[in-house]
Image (tube, rainbow, N blue to C red; front, side, top):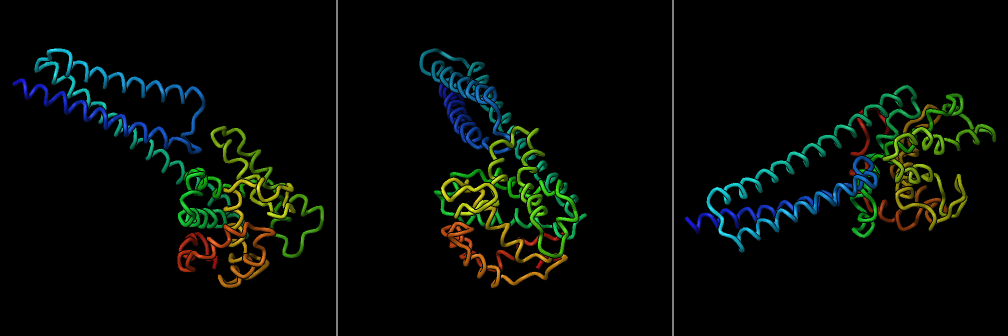
Length: 297
């Protein structure tokens, strides 16, 4: 009987250790636009971790420094199982909420852009290209960017075009100085539209600066080292999409032509190192990024 009692307690200790490890990994993953949280959320996460460690110490104390009976062993073992179940439900709930929010945002952006033949599918296309690009980045680059946050930034990078007059967006010819000035406002408008959503604060610079150039001749004059890495990534994908998409005023260009143009502006408009990585992605993989909403290529 004594062996059975201590076996249950030892199992409870192992399960609690596993629970703590799972919780730490989960907490570290809560750094995206949906779950990044404010300071008080961070305090709650730390408090929960302290309590889990406190419970573990209680298990160890009872196991080594007291004389537990079968009832106590059962309570400790059952408690560890209960915590494991609660954590599992929490993890699944957060995963479901993240997927649902992203799907709703994709649907909303798709509906908004469907009104405009020159935008229809563009943001979804850039989103898909960006996430494919992200998967092909070196590990040291990926660890500096949260994947879900990048996905939202890519999806919403052109949301500011909702504030640009259609006569400017759909003009078949070259924009005049006044029209170009209006067009250049769309990143700033996008940030203004999203400003009430404070959880998106961290990705605002990625959206605001996705039209910056390495040589400093972009919308806001930022140069290479001043431009966020995520903004540089989105810029390349945005450029590829713009070249290969069908617009009312132009036919889509081929993958080969797009890559030729992108390589020609590497080091001036686009980041040269990132262009090399993008250039290494097989054409077939890039074509899979075309959304179903329109015949883009």
